[in-house]
Length: 330
Image (cartoon, rainbow, N blue to C red):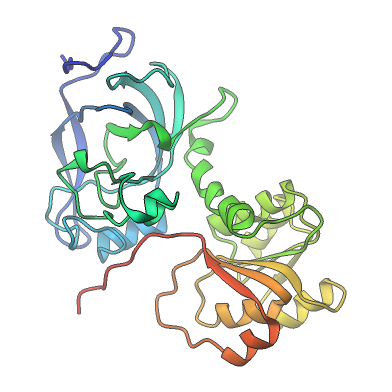
């Protein structure tokens, strides 16, 4: 039975020595294999995975590779387990860990920086310079589970204590898998954007991050919150999550509609979650002078940017998802 030296376990939560895990082979190929249960080190815990969501980025990794980066290259055929939106129960504590207890329910963040590079010392651990370079050598410190280190498509996974979020019993396992997705939107609006209650927000693209962006913006006091998209069923969900107005861009000009709904002027913030080809240009045209645009989506192609529009609106832009993207194979 699982009993690594220096690791605290409990008979109430027995852990096997081996586990089932999905392993990425060729592009688009996952196979169910047996792997050793990983061992938590200093400042780490072992999480029994109780639920895992499937993100569109997981599919990108499985079929194409990026933004996963294993030993500086593509993740295929390297015994790599993807999956990054998971939650579970703490079942073992690494040496010296007392911040969490065995049996505690947690959800997880992806990144734990190395703590040594320039970006980590600046607090920008999601942009760690050791991203993807230490697979199989986790002593370097950097982890991005499901991207540069094994992720959650398995039964157990190790997480740094800085990547854990304790969750209440009232929250379901399924809801808990989306906590960090909501955190992406919150980071864009608060840390990057500096949103103040009463300011106006447009969210473009009603995918999971966009819909949670609506909920977060409304919870933070934004007024109005406008959601744009192409699917009426998703826009309906946005309404239920707090959007004051919704705009179907297939039937309306998005920029004109936003300005009309906001008293004839641009908004303070745009949270761009669609990745549509012209989304950046439209976002810049939606904000007022000095407004802010946060990019929370991955465009699939290079997008020409209107420098005239940008300089006229004096908007600023930031990126909420700081995962480096490796080139796709030709």
